Length: 191
View 1 (cartoon, rainbow, N blue to C red):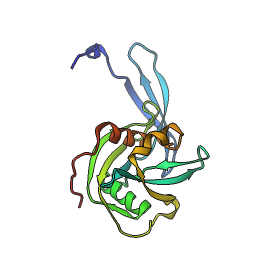
View 2: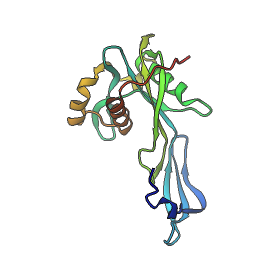
View 3: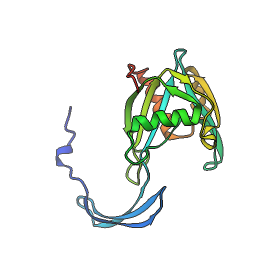
View 4: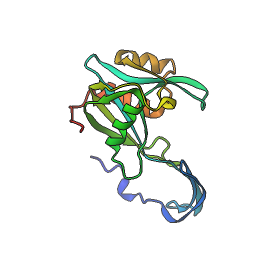
């Protein structure tokens, strides 16, 4: 792989960090930083929880999705099930738990496909994406607030949903684009 001049680049120096606001959901900090060749300044950083999301696929080229309302940005759209990884919890366990709580389906297998930051440079919130293969219906969703309408959506419809602005969350877009680009990963049994 080419160097592209990266060997000459240096990371920012971090002198310290102080909390401006903190609660169980979000922490706002000011980080004292100095980029290479630039003056030192305080950078605002929003720190959120790590999130795990799962695109569960069935044997009919469909993906398990939720039709949900989000008050920010005041619109309805399709989302994949997922949520916060609890303290000390494995991300795969969190992804499976969230699928079951929000949809009533238990994934048969999970494969981690990518971890990304949705707003790198301003927000610290790693998003872990899993793809599941197969699922067993175990009952109604237990997290009614999160559930919305649960449906198996044909993968063939994803491009049209995107074009019509019906896939609103970045994690849903990244996960579904991964599935469309790379196909279904090999099954990995999930306990």
